Length: 206
Image (tube, rainbow, N blue to C red; front, top):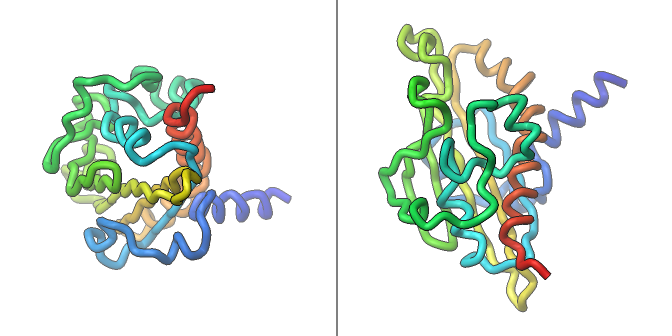
């Protein structure tokens, strides 16, 4: 039973909410990480326009709007981070290509660089810093990682399809094993929460 549950979590960690067609559809930024060892695509439908969703995406980040995960998740895994924003913050709306989006305390030097940005359409983030600093400094391990957020209107006021894909290439072999064994199953929780968090904030309140 435990093995079956793990297999299910690993599969959902790769595919939660997305369709087979969405997983095979190219997204902006796919060409950045060549021959990735791991690709995960998640999706949800939001009853809002891309223009209503976009402001929530550009303000994400550590000590910015957060990642919209449940507060208990933040307390357990990222206790030093602020709670995710529940409103749009004007000072975080001016995101531009080349900007740095932190994803950890300043001393970790962990974060993303904005590679591409098309308002109300797509946002591409890139990182090589999501590893312990000692690993990076010594060269013991390396990670090439992209996050892509895509907004696709469904038409006829049917809302928007919100896709989130991450692609990663890693070395050495044991880091790839660790990613599949730990990061991908954990991503089921984190990505599901982020999708739900964006949806609950962006959908008009009735």
